Image 1 (cartoon, rainbow, N blue to C red):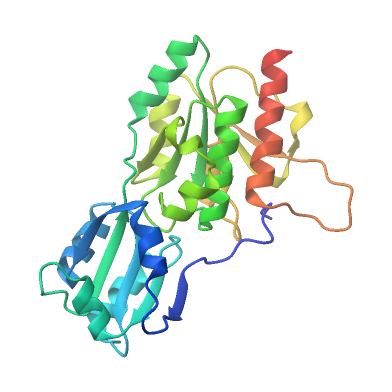
Image 2 (cartoon, rainbow, N blue to C red; image 1 turned 90 degrees about the vertical axis):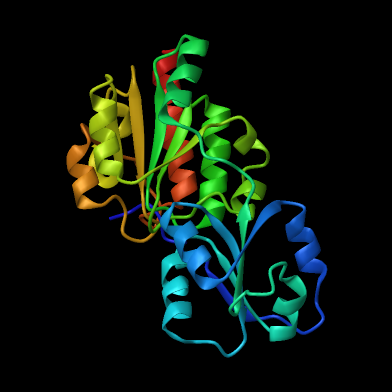
Length: 273
């Protein structure tokens, strides 16, 4: 059972009223890249770029448009259906093919950036790995927690998870500027790579050992799972500890970002002890 009970697919589907432009102006303060055309957008998604917002011509539901929608589902991308005239006015190429995308201006870090930060602080690496966190508010809050508790970085998967959207940037309250966020193709393989570099892994799950009884010192990775299904089986099997949070209330689960905060500070407590 996962810790998350409030998580949901944050992909936003709605028809935007004609003539409403204030939202575009707000977004453009954060976004600095615009993609036009179906193939260019699909290739960008394939390359791992985070799509912050999609503008799709109202009424288009053909196979390639649906493919784009399927690719961004669960990643925190906001989708607006707008009039063709709106796309024409936004287009810089004149060949938008009924779809324009805006991408975030934030770049992802590399794994080495995390290890360099740990070495700079003369601390054993402390990394938070997220297994398909879809809610951008959760991701932003986790990045904020990672920064405050002294974690050296956050790792997220390339697929079926929120990327660094504008919502994530806002929710992180500035922590995104100081905490390395690495996007990887496969979380399981990344765990293997990090184990070879001396890290142990603790996986958050309600069926695990109570966190106070687990040794969470040293070089460690904290794995937090998807809002609805928790940590996937393959990732869980890679972990050295299955760790739970003691609960005494009438409900039996926590929001993913709250669970991250509790477990992260147990790691901090044990480090200071």
